Length: 181
Image (cartoon, rainbow, N blue to C red; front, side, top):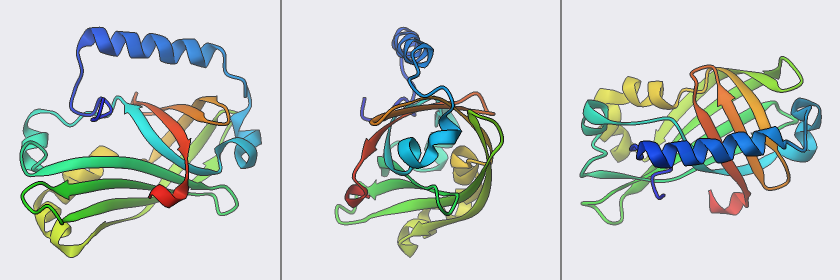
């Protein structure tokens, strides 16, 4: 759906998605993905599903119930620089022309044939008006999307990538053009 699972889904839908994820993972065409990062992972990806959730008080405090809506989530992987930039788009419903983004830059190191260690380097919210809205709860927002830790690449082909992190989250992303970011 439009919220990629972030605002919760039914347990039946979650079970269905997780069964499909596990089926794909069992048929991973790239068993050593960190040895093929340049060929398979480099480039721009769009999040289509995640188990990260923003529910209850956190959703209300961040204004994500009525005022702010989430747009696309992108991840740009630069294998040569060993960097990943995650871009989360937002828009303010009350101000139709008002939109912005949270950009999180991280570096990574290969730790195994399927895993990378991730270190948060920086984060920014633009424009300033959006930062002013999130300022009070910026630490909470960053805690939700902070990539620090590790990521296991459990499936990757030319158009789809699945990963699981040390916080027990699942991420399903599709390859896209960077011009969409």
